[in-house]
Image 1 (cartoon, one colour):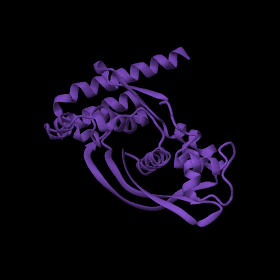
Image 2: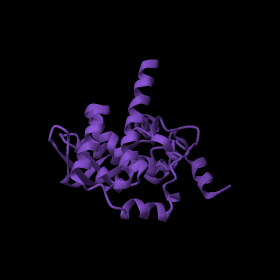
Image 3: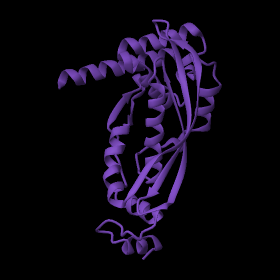
Image 4: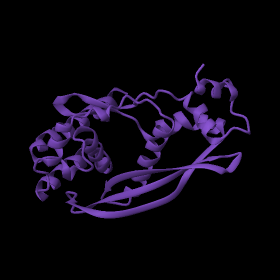
Length: 241
């Protein structure tokens, strides 16, 4: 029997950890119960297939009950953030701002307040209104939970080739103001108030960059197509309901 299994046995694997359990033991108990989480949304990449994504709400609903049983509380204890202009704006002329935050999330043993672990997490979000800080917070909390409890999601970021990453980041970027404005206008036309969220997903998961201003110009048509295909797919799903 492995050392990990010995610990789980001592923790009473069929029930919640005892009051004497340490935070590390409680985390291990939760990890044993939240091993795999399927993605709950599909994002189209135009003519190149699609990828699966996990929402903040699904991660929370999946992990929260076990954290409550284990006596683990988590909350943000520190935020260092800045806002910067992306250099782009909406079709209506509203400036799009990127919120960049470094969050520190604390996991606390509810039976021993001196027993805690602080976890740093970076998060970025774009918006032309006041939603960017909330988006970044949700992103940070989601990934802290996934990584702390080692939840398998099917993501294979480590398998992206260096050549692919280098190509996306060193090609001529879509820094032309008209191209950026046109791209956002299409996103706004397709998704309304969710335009920034969809562009964020498109940038990170289709082109592997932090924001759509870093998408290579040669992929501009692909980005437009991806947005329109996604919008059509969502409209079809809504019509089938």
